[in-house]
Length: 334
Image 1 (spheres, one colour):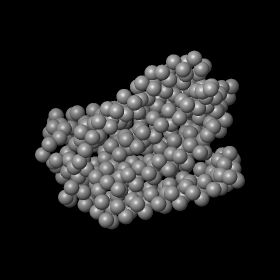
Image 2: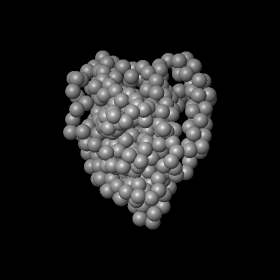
Image 3: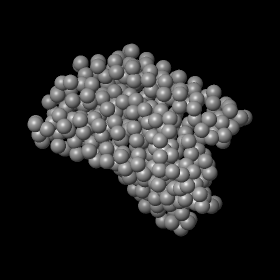
Image 4: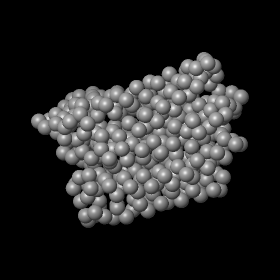
């Protein structure tokens, strides 16, 4: 049996991106919520809830970006020039946010500055990720196997909508994560925030879902022609189920259910994007097979990945297991 290596690698990179969005999404969301909590002890608890895992979460971003460069070099060569500005701003934001984790605990005079850096880095990283997603969905212009568009093509009304959608979506993940990890007043506050953020996020999901089919005729045909119309009915129904579980969990004072229901919303959105994209890796015209490196390179990289990915999954799962449960305000990242 001959393996379809480009297809396998597309699945691996999609998996890495999904895991990154799920894992780093909630800790970026914690940073987005930072200014809305005034007590220093509550802010300490918020940061301590993600301190043991935040840097490990970003491993998946490296895997996704590095994998794209290694196995889909043409896609990397097209996407990077098209998205230089949002990607550079995202990386700078992640740097400031990462530094804030360390410096915030080492100073009193400048603590407010690093609180701002933590919040600003989280918002900017989330917003730029959403803008990059929107720019990809609306399509990237190619000419002679290279980027053929302009410097500001990534900045459109649709990419701004997706940017805001990701900011509010990550804030929802962060608030439901804190519902799961905190107690007392902070837990109650985050439960209230989660209800509001869920309503806003669902509104953005609905708006983006309505606009996406009009970004490219292929999307419209895929979603509204037979048999895709069945998926068009099933996906909103599943989103409604996830939304019901989210609100029910919040109203019934459940701690774990809201977080996993919010994750389900992101998973369904990710599946919807995959349905729109496939078989292209760079819409509207660059397929995964056209963008792939030679099979020999794909085979060589796959050997290491088969060993590496289970190891990353293993230590990630172990870290979450060790730091399971509620955060103790008297202990943590001091």
